[in-house]
Length: 124
Image (cartoon, rainbow, N blue to C red):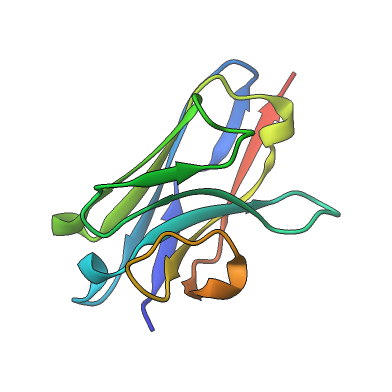
């Protein structure tokens, strides 16, 4: 298990940008893929983006492709999600999670540690 803490959420106008961060505890951060998920009120948690341990590969949901960028800094045990051209439909609680291994995965059940989430609200 690893302890994950998200930060950087907030209120932004449509078309704006926001970067959320996820700080991880533990010395094994660089061995697992990391992902971002989001959950809007009344909806299921959905995959947003994921990145391999050495940042060699990334994957994005179609709804955010071209607007969001996932990155990580293993020296700082931190993963980031840069969100540009935000839309009201991006409003949700954003969670970071650790994949059970080094592979990119898109199903929540394949992640073994989760942060508490950070709220992102995009106004019209």
